Figure 1 (cartoon, rainbow, N blue to C red):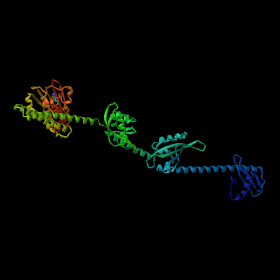
Figure 2: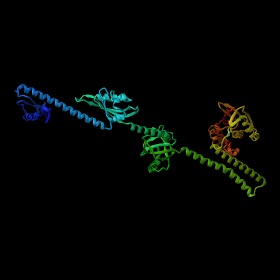
Figure 3: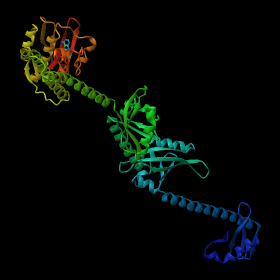
Figure 4: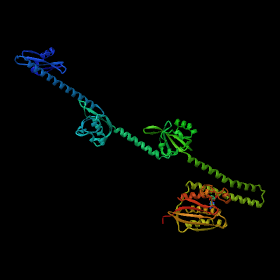
Length: 556
Ligand code: ADP
């Protein structure tokens, strides 16, 4: 029987030896009595841990050799028991480790040196939707889409290093698991690296959320890039993001150049405080201020704070509109109104003067007749002006629909020449026309109106007895009309401006020669509606040639 650390080891037959074992252990010395002998059991440090006793059936001499044999047996028994105990403790410990690993939400794999999966905890199996057998017998990286990354983590762990990274693992159902995987060396009892401990954290949910957010960001970016309106996202005035339109408005080539800059640097210094207070107030009302482009030029700009949800949070967004064009249009309108009222007032004042004199009753017959003629002339001029003003407005704004039909250029020219015949005869101007067989697509009445206007100008601004040549040629898909006169010509700096409303070479031209200064503007409007162009070439003192184009008729 063996007594070790207060515990008895033996069977039913040796049961009776228990008191003897205790006595030997207490005495801490070999004892013998008749058929029973016992020796103390000592551990490696020489401390007594118990006793080993044997019992015989007959009394025997307790020789020295017996005692030594028994002591050797006792030492072997002590070693054996110590070993068993250590193993039991190890098993308990391992069991404890497995329990902990099972309880963890994080995936854990224990890899052998060659990378094979020795153990995978339930969380990892759940993440991979896998049975333990699916992982067994092969390296973990055989189950990864980017196996090299995982193998590198394992190799580093074998070299004693911890490392980690994002890895895409393949689940048993074929889906991808985005995971953060970390590897650490797994040590054996002697401290040597025997494999790798791998932890796996599921990132699929986070990945999906990130992807959804980046898609939303993408959509937002595409929208804002397509916007004509400038959009600036800022934090306390510092630009965090801006679209192309905003960069363009503030004179930058690229939106990235705006990032990190104070928004208010793009506002004229005198407007900065107002702009800052307005935007801080959070009002949705727009504010018109003076903007400052990168090159230092100023321009009218409108700012409007618009809170929007960007990247999952509410951002401070300013919508930016360049008002330059609007201001130009408003100025042109104002100018037009003032010119129109001046142009209308001049004949009206003259008319009023003539009628006033007639009404005074102090004019003789001849004088009264002269005054009536002046009144009629001014009334005609007023009617022409009002008609032209209405025409230029309606054609310019596209309100007059052009009735495009096939038409022979020769017929259009003929019509126009007939309309100015009286005027031409009066100034003895000879009109020479050659239009060939060119067919165009056009609103015939409107093109005749253009030709009449150009012919009457040619007659008006040429000396009596001169010649006007009209011709039509084709060029590509277009017909090119030309009207060449031998008149006074047009100075180079007026070649463009005469096509503007009330644009004249000489301010007195219209009144002296009965024009309105709107004829060429109307012609340009009509031709633009046809998809054509109009321009003039001229040598002052020698003559001018007006050109315009129309689409050829391709229906025949
Ligand atoms: P207007 O009613 O004054 O003729 P237009 O718009 O037709 O108005 O012409 C504008 C101005 O262009 C004229 O006032 C004149 O100064 C100049 N112009 C037009 N046609 C000719 C031409 N054939 N030769 C010289 N100047 C011309």
